[in-house]
Amino acid sequence: MTPLATLPMYNWPEVCVAQQAFWAAVRDGLRARGVDAPDVLSDGTGWREPGLVFSQTCGWPWATQYRNALNLVATPVSSIPGCDGDTYSSMVIVRADAAAETLADLRGGSVAFNGVDSQSGVHTLREAVGPLTDGTPFFGRGLETGAHRNSVRAVARGEANCAAIDAVCWAMAGLYEPEAVGRLRVVHLTAAAPALPFVTRRGGPAAEVRAALEEAVAAGLGKSLFIDALVDSDSIRYGALVSRVKDVPPLF
Image: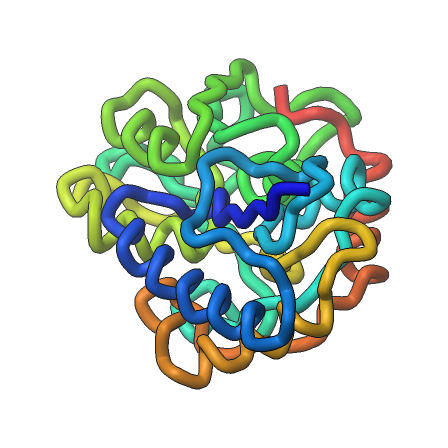
């Protein structure tokens, strides 16, 4: 069984070196504990691969598709705006010159989103606009972009009226997409959700991964990835993401 490690959730090119350095520390910690770990991170998710040693996933896919394939290891803590302890919110963004001042002002408009299985880009926004709906979709049109970064660009270009961008990606956009962010503003902060957990395969080396992660974070290698600390992951909180929107209509 070939060991595999991935970090697919925030893998912008600008942080690839930092991600590989973070993984190198985790890898060495795992090897010191007798766990076979790959030299470098692989592309993709690998969430159903039998050799998956380490990855990170979005809470919604874990709760709806992968809870029988992935063991939760730890949840990151970040101190950036939009994060509180081991939770994060999404920023609902519009163009700086848009007339919209509140969520209600966006009714019937268009929304850019990264993917249908995204907690931060779709389901947190469903929860936010739920009280404003009459049981029908709130938005008139959706634009699937494939990534939060693409959604930031789409709204900045006027291709969609708004998007929900998770706090970490919004912080990254401030660093690496300053031109686009300069044309945008935040009109709403969504309800908090547990941050994106680190995982291993079902039955994988969860304790060893957690220990190696703790060492990497203690060495400061998570700072450039907005990881300040780690806490235990609570499966009940991730499962509750689904019940939070069970009676809410689709976005569009």
